[in-house]
Length: 468
Image (cartoon, rainbow, N blue to C red):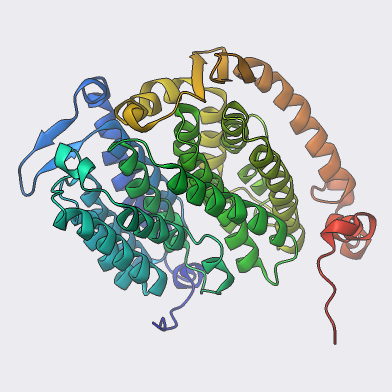
């Protein structure tokens, strides 16, 4: 097992440095994101025909690759990292340009190198399993991701190795039972493990055993992580469980093999990237990381539940609803236990602004970016969950009979959000999360603690009783 050497915390490394250091580091971390956003100018062309090239290695840039090329740098851009971790992030994102490589073994080898860079034994294990799975396909006649011969070379052992590597890389159950040291950079890059699994859909439909395995892994992870996040032992473990809940939803949505399911998984990438930063920072408005309308996290939860309802998986839809509720309470507990910063930092303000903007305008990126990413996968998808989008109006999830099973009107949600924000402020005022000038003389001990009141009133969030 790899033992990571102790390094100072990123915030400690920047403490005492000149005020310009965080500014410079922030711009360095934002460069990959700005470069990825620059690729959007070719999106209309990419949506019709992927861009290809042969230097330095054969590559192909399609809409699916572009989704990950935007989401991963977005998750890194706002993290509070020091010089060393910022350089690691730039190197890791540089290696992840392998997502555009056509050769089957290019991406898994890059992930193994990143695992060594992050000192993560899980990434090394997952990378080895992914290399083994894709290696079996390569030995059976597969060569590149889009090659027709690759689709005919897929076998059940190869697919199960790919799925197992994905679950380990995403920190799914039961591998999540093993503790690991918190690493914001590793957490920001975790969603990359969804890409190889989604790519397999381009080769054709999965058999029923593969679908069941993906749904079980995702569903069990969502239920376990969402419930245990409430009584996790410490803050770092609680954040890890909340993140596992989000990634478990994405994994289960991929297993649905529907248009709205893949759209929900891709949208979860954006919600994860923005929510991670807000979870890591102890600030007054960090609850926007959760499924609060009209933020991006609310749209992600709605899409996931709409995808399961459209597919007829109502039990999984109920699990998603319960896990969303439990993870939201866990986020409130994070704020209750943390030392709340009195000011909203510029990175957090940008994250919250992007979360609100993407939530309100969600039909636009879904139509222009994510539906083109799903189009090449149609040969492996089922007709049991479609996505109907009306720009500036809303989104609807359709079942096999083209009946609307879930509707999200964006404008109505925005109006509803005003009421929700007002109620949230009133609750924050009642429980002492915000203070007015007249409250400055009030002793801190007189401020009630929301989490302790919830523990006294609601029996099922008290956690298991410990003996001894």
